[in-house]
Length: 47
View: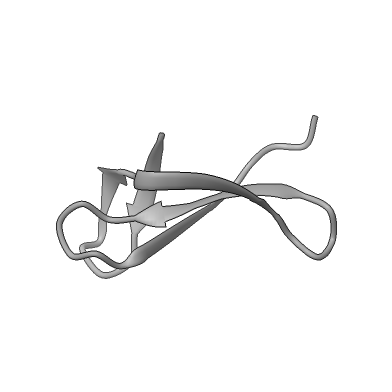
């Protein structure tokens, strides 16, 4: 899965991906940037 790293300012492949549920019930992916280690958070589409 690809997400946008705010620190690198580029799209990166997310490593150590885990699916989480936010307070409002929406699904999201959380993982780390392979280059800088910053947390990348990607909200998934409703289904």
